[in-house]
Structures are given as C-alpha cells and as structure tokens.
Length: 193
Image 1 (tube, rainbow, N blue to C red):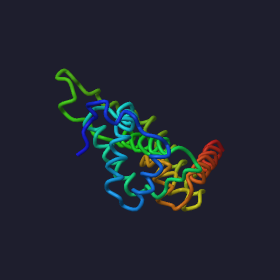
Image 2 (tube, helix red, strand yellow):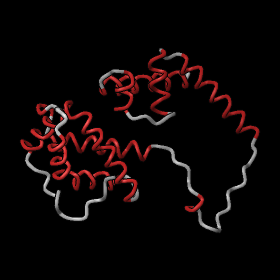
Image 3 (cartoon, rainbow, N blue to C red):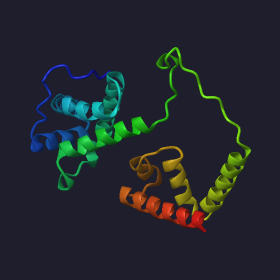
Image 4 (cartoon, rainbow, N blue to C red):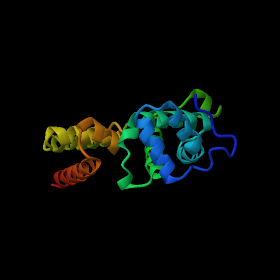
C-alpha cells in the first residue's frame, strides 16, 4: 500500500530526460526503473491528488491507482506531446477527479447526533411536471444515435470521465468531447421545441 510522503525525499521529480528514460524502461516492465520513477515522483503526484481528494487514506488509495496506471500505460507516453511529469500529473489529476465524481454514500458516523432529515413534501403538481420533463428528455435522447446516447448517459448519468469514455468506445478524447458537446446541443434544441 502506498503511504503519504513523509520526507522531502522524492520532492525533486528529476529531469525530463531521466523521467522519459524511466518511462521507456517501465514500458518494458523494468521493476527497478518503476521503483526509481516512484521515488522521484511520488511526492509531486501525491500533492496533486491530495489537493483534489479528501483525506490522506483516500489520497493514498488514488495514488496507488495512479502508479498502477503508470505501470500499465508507460508505453503510451509520447515525448513529442509534452514533458513526462506533466503526462504523469495529468493521469494523477484525472484519477483524483474520477474518485471525487464517484457517488459515495454518507456514513452514519459522519452525521452529527442532532441531525434531522427534512420531511418529504408531496407536491402532486411538481411530481407531474417532473414526470413530463423526464418523458420529454427520454424522447429527445431517442433522437440521438445509439453510440452517442450511450456516451451521454455514461457521462452525465453515471459520471464517467472523458478518458474512461475514450477507452470504452475506442475513440480519441477530443472526439468524445465533441460528440458530448454536440449531443447536449441537440438535446437542448429538442427540449426547447
């Protein structure tokens, strides 16, 4: 299990050349290179993750996932597209944001002793309006082609990231963003008519 950095060791992330070389070696499953990459970058990546994710335990869990992804995807690093630390930081940031977006139930220990839930107010007119809006949205969703409809639902109903959608649908992230933007515009037009 990854622990939160306690010392300045690892605070110097190394040169771009060294990190690029280490990533190339990690792509060939070099464990010593991976250990060195971790030593050089864990403090920086932990800092990125801990600013997004609440709590040191959750931050350490996310950081562990980040390093698993780095181990699996080191071969995807392309030096012509940016610095190695920036690439790793992007993976850390995206993984931390994915964690924050996940819906997690509130624990009973997190609720104060004098908490009283609000009484649910039954409003038949509001319920009917919500039902009509839901039917209109479903009708408009049917107007999207199957792949784009699934992508919209996964993104906005299930909270999947653009990166996850890109992997799932085998499309570049830029294409995913364009399709989502255009699909939302189409839904807005449909709902407005």
